[in-house]
Image (cartoon, rainbow, N blue to C red):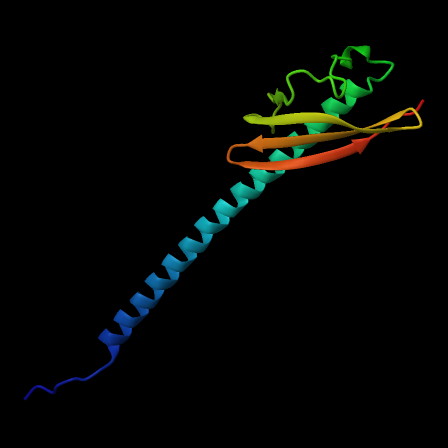
Length: 138
């Protein structure tokens, strides 16, 4: 007469397969979330540098260096017609990014003009803003 075998082989195998499938799904979810977070951080960093570049362009327009007078683009504050000024970037790393730059004359003290430059860098659906307060005395 055949002996009836009782074992845990089949239930254990089903349990292990289910457990491994659950772990694989969880790892896949974590990897995809990590990739999305990395992409957003990359866009935020690019937007920051676009904003910083826009603020640098405005500083050069306000106070053109003596050795580079071509920076004087008649963008002096507060008569900055067409404000905000928009810069589209084509440089590697900032492609598809832009900067919107505004400039305001805050106050004049002892014949020194104090300006506020606000630059917002935009890359895709994220943006970063840089604000610079400055004056220049020779």
